[in-house]
Image (cartoon, rainbow, N blue to C red; front, side):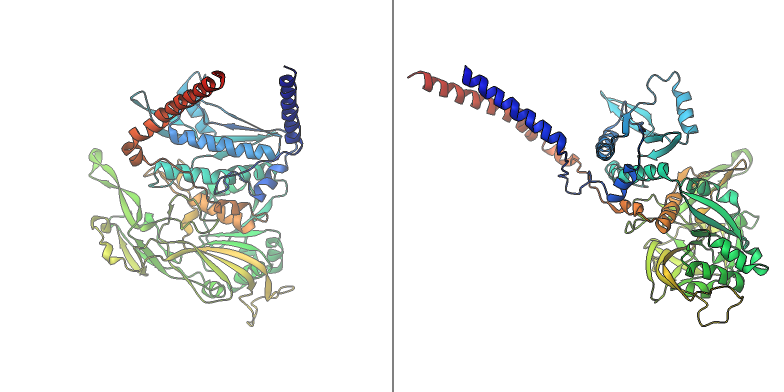
Length: 554
């Protein structure tokens, strides 16, 4: 009896010792092949800055289909990793519809907060029902709150692919929210005006969104003629210049100001239409309009960086839709039809900027040629394998929707539409007569980067009742495109100093059960999972009884 008691006490002491050591020398081991539960260094740095409670409410609870249960579990695991880095984080999963006096009122309230719902089919007990789910999290720190989308939709993606995309995005989504909540010294973005650029109302949604990350100001180049040095000094107070769809030519003086800004280290994001063509121009009695080259006087400017923006239009077999009316009066019907001058662009997923994006919508885009130069160039977006460039001037007619294009007519394909340029930028005006006198003219600058996109409308949001709609949403077809996320990624990459955007390249592979094998091998695995444990239990019991009989029969 004494020996047994001593053994129990020793076991308890060892157990207590292990617990004490575990609390002192705390560690976690990630045994997953893709290290999905190992946080990236930028994510750790983002979460370690909090010194007060951070409350995270995840709206993923209640009657959920299997794919959302998997997303919920992966979110819980990831947040557990964040909590291990900062104990100030507190998170809870809630069902927003639970105890709500009115489901419709709650849905309206959540939508009013900018939380877009998702409708899913739930099968339970042989009954199929439609459920409204809000796959969002709300992170609150003091008086500031940030919305975090948990679900990543992708056109044509299966349920498994959608879950994979969403899980892969989780670490970046929360790290990005933590970074926003901790921002005190925001970088500055200059919206360039004075050359017929897009009006603010057509960029309102994008500018409102990036205001969470950056301070925004406007710089008008009209003053270059009277005060060039003042305009350059003002521009140099900004970290990035955004030039969105200019329609009037740049003067040599204006180009020189932008050149010196970029050579001095200023980042830039260009959205350029080399051909003048708008969808509204086609809505006339003839249903036709002339697409003609737009003279912006930027050819030599981009040539220096190894780019040539061509005066043509991309005709893509894989196109987004426009809505056309058929019939007259009360008999009119509105039907979506593919419009091949509005390419549907699928990301290549080969860079932090273009990874895990919904399909993008381009409108009357042109091609970009990448030329030999000393700069590094990366094609971020390109047309489909079945696309071609058509020269301008060109007559465009709505009648083309009545003819079914043949895929054999598309031979070129993979035409660059957005290009990232990186390197030590040289001045376009090196060894040239300077159009104006400036102080401390630079011929060579530090490491820099710019992004050039061959469609000014990529940043353009639609208008309804005088109010801007979300960028990427088409009010005529109710389709959502990935334009806004791509452009936000562009800005984040150009201005990111801590590598947060690089988290987007992390690959996560969620293993799913093979439905065909499940059906074919159902009986076998039922026998293994149910029958084998019973057999082993009986054998173990028989062996113990045999041992006891042999031992005590002596």
